[in-house]
Amino acid sequence: MEGDIAGLAAGLAIGLGAIGPGLGLGLAVSKAMEALGRNPEAAGAIFVPYILGLALTEAIGIYALVIGLLLLFA
Image (tube, rainbow, N blue to C red; front, side):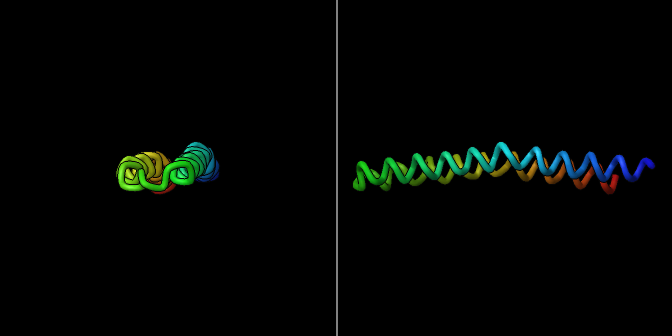
């Protein structure tokens, strides 16, 4: 019974933890492409903050995955 609850908790942690980063990454890409469409010369100024923001947003999903795996195997 305890293993079943841990599996459910891990699935919920990973699933719900992926919703925020998924939405955040989609919005970030959308706004970056919109900014590049308006001002293509600003590609250099947009690229570094864009990549940094994507990495930080994706880290949240990775943390959710780690927590889910800890719930399963710890």
